[in-house]
Length: 340
Image: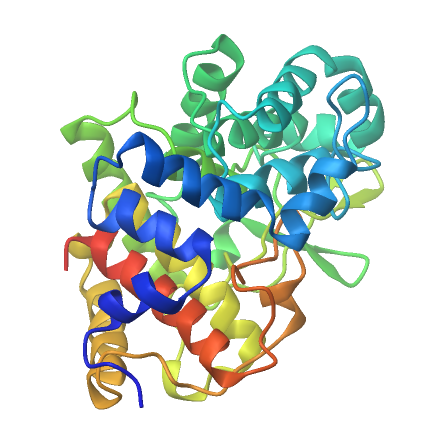
């Protein structure tokens, strides 16, 4: 029988990553040195954390590539989500590799990454900056520059009345018209994990831009055109800000959890009626199950960690209890960062 106090039970029975993050992020505890060391030692024994750590090459690189699965980007994201401290040697040297290997990163991302940056859709430079941000590194010039770009990307949405005004057909696909800018998942992720940009004016702008994205939802899939080449921007989870929550499938739920957590961290969620409505639906669902998220949803998007996917902190979901722990924790994060 589950406890009627989810936080209490999670702190007792959930995986060490969830225990650590509840204490650090939701309860804002100042952990004693012994407590911190004990939790970190348990987190470092996690199979995925060990796999990522063992993939590290002598120069600090994680995995075989920069972007996607089995990558430096995905490895840093996983380590931070699991709760590995930023000063741990594996993470510290991975961040040094992220800083020093600009040519390798640009070569791997190729023309597509450069074009997405050039046109304001979030390419190589934006992705790299967002990885720094997830690891709590904000004061580097490349990160600060991309924060400016991310704000411009959201600001561009404010004047869009209909999606038809910014897209056109090309070879059976929809593409953005020349000169259009549009925010990607990396725009959202970068701003969600940084603080220096936060001012009343910027926050008001982001509320307005997010409200516009809600009204334009659902968005079609739109490519970026470079001459005759079609490039896919990072639109994962960024196409429907107003879903019908009662009919979402498991993949849509994963996107919802990720998007709503980022919007809550961004500081805009509580100011937008539609997003407050979604949080209230979540709260009703939790209330019906004694505070627990008990929907029977599972998809590889939750368990497979990479650039876009991965939210599962428990070692697996072979038992319903572990799935419930993970999704209840994500629900608690959304409510905590939203201020609701």
